[in-house]
Length: 180
Image (cartoon, rainbow, N blue to C red):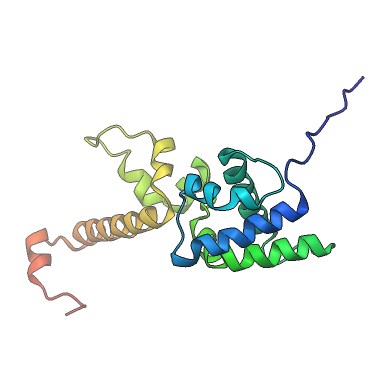
């Protein structure tokens, strides 16, 4: 038989949540900071219970995460949730864009990597090259892999021109390039 999950009771009242957000806005009036000890001293006398510094900092962290999790589709089913969302938006709206940029790009598997960047992968299989494990090569990221793939394509194209045209590298280098 399954055990019931017993959630701990709410520590902060609705009024205290609102008060913490309002006081945080006042505290950050001169600029954002994470001086939770100073903030705790700033807000503790206004709260209904004697919360610890850790409880207050954790409440702010959770409210911040909740705001970012809701994004553009907030749950405004109660007046309290609406007030929390509006105060949170006033505090953290500038962080939404930053967080979106920081999201990690989706990792791709080795097979997909080899299909997408065949010249780059082949370059590490050439004789005389240092041993590089291709599954670790995937970790360089798509942008860098794309740059290296382009460079290796150019190297292979030059090799092919040399083999087909019979020109030496010096002769080829002495000719004006198309870009000039």
